[in-house]
Image 1 (cartoon, helix red, strand yellow):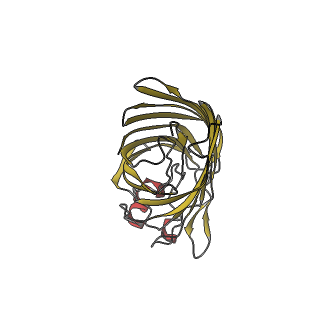
Image 2: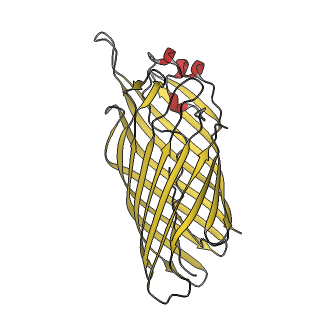
Image 3: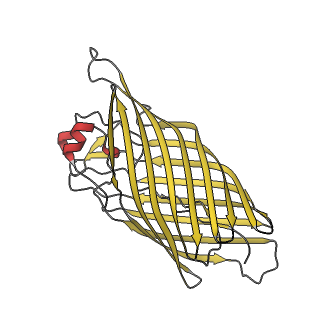
Amino acid sequence: MKYIIGCALLLFSSTIADACDVCGASSGNQNLGLLPQMYRHFAGIQYQYNSFSSTHVPLSDNQPVEYSDEYYRNVQVWGRYCIGRKWQLFAFVPYRYNRSTYTGQTEPSQGIGDATLLVNYTFIQTSDSSESPIQHRLQGGAGIKAPTGSYKGVSVLEKQGLPNMQPGTGAWDIPLNLNYTLKYNNTGLNMDCSYNITTANRDNYKYGNRLNTQLLAFYWLQGSAVSVLPQIGTRYEYALHDYDNYNRKWLNEQTGGYILSGVAGVQVYYNNIGLQLQYSKPFTQNYGAGNIKAIQRVDAGLMFLL
């Protein structure tokens, strides 16, 4: 079946309560984007860059307002393994390099991140033999994110004051996803929705549950050897507050909120090789009680169809 279908999945203790814990990105969020040839295995590498600026409001009037910039870089190997025509397995192993510049000092944090395994099932699929110009597919599934990432706990948080700066979260999470693609000839729409259910880690810090939705319009330009897939759309992200102490239900008010972004990208396929590039810029946002501003996001990838 010669068309490209979109598939996306999306996605401490009380001693840190006095830390300056305003920060932007959250670990363990997966985005697949539009993928080719849904019945073939593939392996690849992805790169993601996020940048944020943060305002740190003082606890008293005689202290100055301070500012920081956060940069999150993630490189991960990933792949898909197809089981028959209905089931698909996705695996991700990330390496994260995070950096915060605060009061003239730079704090880097890097290491292996949390690995994720996802299982998807195809609920609706237009028959391959159908001659109709209209095609559609509905997929969904769930998975598990394991605490394999580098997580050093409260001692690092007391020094950096930024819970999301660590490569790992120290907790098990459950990602859920639903993806629908509607295609007419070479033009299509892809809508995906993912929800990440988090748990508290050993320090009783709990990252907020996170919802990610994305709507993309795409067009498939097919040549004799090269196929090009331009795309444009929007992304909406919503996160609940973190808990500094989940047992005591101490909310971290400097976390959580929403970001609505515009998205533009392109994918290029040559034989069994695919390249992907996507850029996101926020339209409107209210994150971290208004003290966190997302600047931009860049996604790039290389895949090999097997």
